[in-house]
Length: 75
Image 1: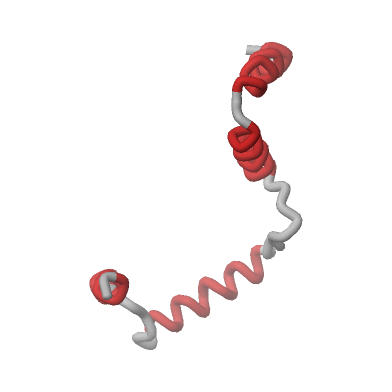
Image 2: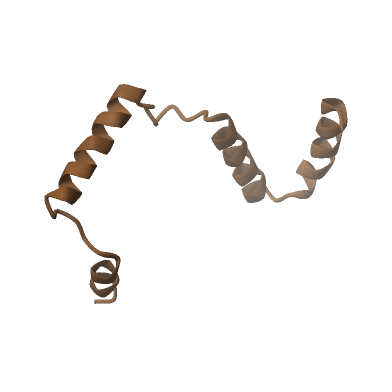
């Protein structure tokens, strides 16, 4: 399917949606394109630093088990 055919189909379906549904579709498209000015992406160095810190916390025993989280949420 060509991009022209896709655009034609999309343009045909979009008016059939309510305003709320159209807004949701727009947000999904923005999400797919990663267009979000409020979100700041991190670089690989920062990502690896955060992973290392998380591993250190787990190794130090600073974590919550799934079972404990379920118990806490059910309160």
